[in-house]
Image 1 (tube, rainbow, N blue to C red):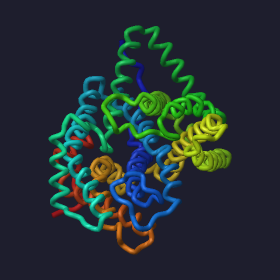
Image 2 (cartoon, helix red, strand yellow):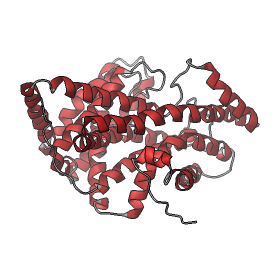
Image 3 (tube, one colour):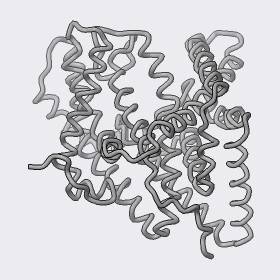
Image 4 (cartoon, helix red, strand yellow):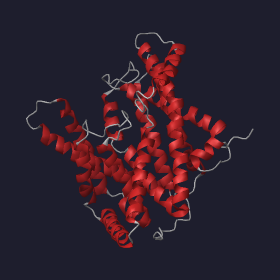
Amino acid sequence: MKPIAAPALNTRLDYLDAVRAFALLLGIVFHASLSFMPIFIGWAVMDVSTSPFVASFMHVSHSFRMELFFLIAGFFSHMTFHRKGSGSFMKSRFTRIAIPFVAGWFLLKPLIVSGWVMGSESMRGEVDILNGLKIGFLSLGELPTGLLVGSHLWFLYYLLLVTGAALAMRAIVGRSERAYAVLTRWSDAVVSWVARSRFSWWALAVPTGACLWFMSNWGVDTPDKSLAPHWPALALYGGFFGFGWVLHRQAALIESFARVTCARVALCVASVWVSLALSGYQADMGHPQLDLIRAGHALSYSLMMWSLVALSIGVFKRLFDRPSKVVRYIADGSYWLYLVHLPIVIWLQIVFAELPFHWALKLAGISILTVVISLAIYELVVRSTWIGALLNGRRRERWLKF
C-alpha cells in the first residue's frame, strides 16, 4: 500500500537544526562538568576546584538532553522516510548511524581509555602520555569483553534500535490498510491532544515515570554497559523518538506543543525544584517512605523532562526560525563535535585539574576549547570530504579558503 503523505516541508527547519545542535553541545558541557563534582563519582579525573552547583546542573541537563535529541531524530526520520522512501531511508541510516558507531568506537575507545589511565595517574601527581596511549590501544585486544562499555556512542546504538523498531512496526501494520488507518488515526489523535491540551505534560509524565521507576538510579540510566538492551531506557528513548515520528505527520502542531507561556515556565521551574529536593533522599535507603518519595521524584523528574524538551523547542523557534549561515554551520558540525568530543574533554580535564582557577572558569575553558578544536578538525578534514558526506548526507564547502 502507498504511505499516507506527510505534510510538505519545502524549507529547511533551521530552528529544529539548532535544537538538535543544542542537545549535542549541551552533552559536551555535561561531560566537561563531570570532573568538578564535589564527590568522586568514578570519572577519569577529579578537579581541585569543585561545586555542588555542578551536581544540580548535571541532574537537570541529564534529564532532557538526549530525550530532546531522540524526539528531533524521530521527527526528521519520518520526514526523510516519506521524502526518500524506505530503501533510501535505510541506506542513509546505515551510513550516518551504523558506520559512525562502529568506526567511532574503534577509533575513540582507545583514546578514552588512555584518558582514564592518565586521569588516574594525574591524581597521584604523575602523567605518562605514551603509556596511557599504549594501554588504550591494547584495550582493543580485550574484545569482545567490554564492548560498548565506557563509550558515549551508546546513543547511536539505541538510535539504531528504535529506528529499526519503528520500521518493523510500520511494515507489520502496513500489511493491512485497515490496521494502518486505525493506528495512524489514533496516534495522530493522541499527538494532537498532547500538543493542544494544557494538561498534556501531566499525562505524558505518567508513562515516563513508569520507565524511570525501573531504572537502577533515580533518573535516567546511561545504557553503556552492554549491547543487551536496557529495556527501561529503550522504552524511554523509543517513546520520544516515536512521539517525534508521529508529530511530523502533523508538523504544524509542533508550535502548540512547544508554546512558551508563563504557566508552563512556572510548572517547569517547580518540577525542577521538587526533583532536586527529592533526589537527595536516594541515599537514605532506610527512610520509611522511600517508595513514596521515589514515586514523587519520578513524577517530578518526568515533568521536568517533558517541560524542558518542549520549552527548548519553543525558545529556539522564537530565536532561530530564520536562515542563518552560522547556525547551519554549527548544526552541520554538531554531529561530528559530539562524536569526537569525549577524549578531548578528558585530556583537557587532566590539563586543567591542578590549575588554581575557579571551577566555572575551567569548565568554560574546557567546553570552549573542546568545541574550537573539534570544529577546526571538522573544517579542515571533515566538512568537504567523504567523511562529511557520510555524516551530513553530502559534502559541504569549507568556510576557510586556502
